[in-house]
Amino acid sequence: MTVYALKHPDGRWIYHLPKPDTFGTPGFTSRADVTGVYADGQPMNQLHGDWWASPLEATRLTATAQPRPKTVGYRLTDPSAESARFPATLTVEEWAERSDREGDTLWGLYTNVHEEQPALEHVYDGPVMVLEGREPPSPDERQWIAQLPHALTERPEYRHLFPGRIPGLRAHLHHVIKDMPGIRHCFDGYNGFTGLHVVVEVPFDKPQTRWVADLSRRTGKPLKTGRTVRETVTRSLNLPVQADVHAATYEEAMRVWEEQVAFWLSVVDSAKVVACSTCHGTGHVQDGAEKYSR
Image (cartoon, rainbow, N blue to C red; front, side, top):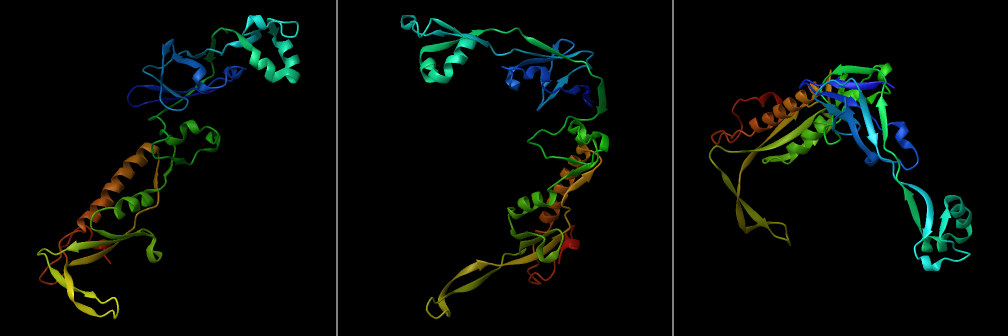
């Protein structure tokens, strides 16, 4: 079976080594039973899933495992209970024969007799297919949707090295921007616009206030009582944020993702310029967000 490997830029060799089928025999049901994976006899470090790392290229890849003890018979837990009906020991065959008619009774009287099994070793002897690149994204990283060549559609080990996309850039920025200070609204797809529509509250360069009268609950008319509120000017932005990040590799897409997030957050921050108190907010200082203003 072909072994897939990555030659990492930092010099490590990263191998995709799934649990061998030979470790799926009775008593061998989980990854916890694997006791080690080795490159030329040296223990490898598990990254995530079936990916294992070695500081050097290996000429021999192996995995070892310890089968669970095998049940070889049953014995009475209380020797004084021995009788013609319940002998001191039962073979596996005798247990199977009696369990249909005395199952619960047997479990109350007998315990398993185990026999340790020899350790197993598997040699990954298939050809090694190597590509250069970083390790695949872990489950807690942003996921990658690859456009794989047909020959590799059943080989997810290399997805992150082929062209594809990281979904959810616009959704991520929508979540971040709406919780930023000074943001009144942030909508995705507002009024048919493909992108984010952001409404920013802009303060005046010289703080301004106005009097707001309380309203009568009975008549709805203004009362003599009220409160002083701070005045602001709202500024609307249409940000053409793309839904996903497309790139030649996952690593490149992550760089673009980080650059895009930083850029759009800076645009929103730059929109929070103070409004001119002289013109009462009809003009704004020119900055990087001007071309996105409505």
